[in-house]
Length: 614
Image 1 (cartoon, helix red, strand yellow):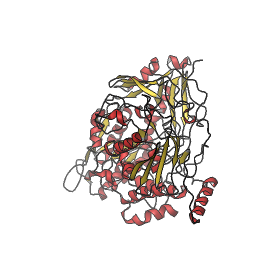
Image 2 (cartoon, rainbow, N blue to C red):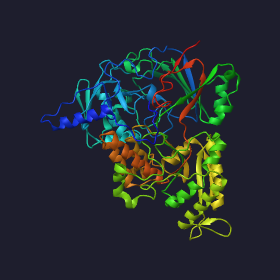
Image 3 (cartoon, rainbow, N blue to C red):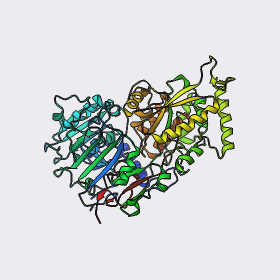
Image 4 (cartoon, one colour):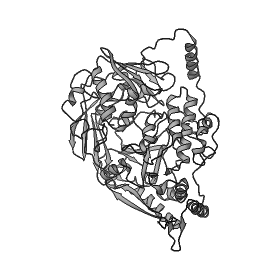
């Protein structure tokens, strides 16, 4: 696990450099080497684990099987189909009930190993990917997983599934069965990530969907090949998954030490405040605390004092991602970057962080903070990073090339200076305060907007309320509106908001998901992650550059250049992130001593945990 500073350039990898040198030499030979099936694949170089690995490094291969874990979630659900846009799906169907061709090792930036497929084959340029299915792979009804199921799943997801599946499908020129257990995908474009993206597509049984509308919400669980079955559903309130004793993959090295609980239960609460009380009473057995102040002061209840509940801190080395309040630039009110900067400067982060978190949480300085992929705040772009951005120099928002850093106020006096700077920016953008203290444009229209939040987001509501009060000093009239989760889902899907809460988690190997997050196609297409309505040819070009990068250096430069565009764009008023997870849990719930690179993320709980009584 890397402990390098997130602002330090990535070190050269001798193994990787040797591999690249081998590729160059092979290219000079008259007869290039034929691609061969391999047990795994990495974004760059070779995967860390050898073909004969016995388990993933971050598991306890001897973990006992049995017991149960109960986890709580806020809100509700109205579907067991997580593969479509409609509805609010229940959590974990995709990870527990279905499987993918390859499985991800979360102790590496982005490496996959055989799961339903025993091997993957591609060429040096990654113009295609061919997967060979395991002969033993079975759905939960005992029927074999076939190439027909794979091809149907990919096409159905790519055309009728959620938008996150569409981008990769559009890059496939041909999808075909090439053998009794082989499927091959030939690509239309240069994209090194595509073989990995396809390796992580869920595989469904074609026959089980005959006569059913794939695009409709449903409480019929999909038929999958995964370790668990849906045992019981109480609509909107709870779901119980039961470990399948006949699971075909239980003896695979990749699965050893994983999926140890006999029962995994998720309970949904309309009132998020009730979740902690349910945990204290023992009804919930694991609880993630997001507030460090409460972590320090609110755990003196009897079960904790008796030692029946323990507190665990799980560090990580993944990017911070972005979380905060997003400005919808489809609205003319927020199209001027000076306006967005003024509103950001009016947010007194240091004060709010102290009030909400005791000042503990670090601020999100860029979209890829806490990782080597993040740009260095306040410094000019250099080298390849600058070369990638220069062709778009005339269209870039100030600070993108020369350096941008979020405002910092050391004390109240310093914050007052920031407010005066906000007022000057508003004036430059054409907004003036009238004799009644109201900010108006030349036509007399007041500067007024709505901050849209969901029921249960109490902490964010408190944060937004402090911001609203600060904005009054600029003559800005902002108000907080609170709606239910279903309304929020519909309004954000159609971009029917002015400002709202925005969060996007990011990995150490960002790729095609960035097209959905920030590609210009999301300006008008509903259901994308581009809530800010960013229409940036430069961002599109940086995403394309990182997708075709063939070495870590060029990849890092493209990601950092994109980070500059996003951060200097002032599209989101960032808040904080946590460099660790804080999990309180019953003492019988255990996790491995080795913490994976990604920490408490996908692949951690409940995947590698187990139940063990004293």
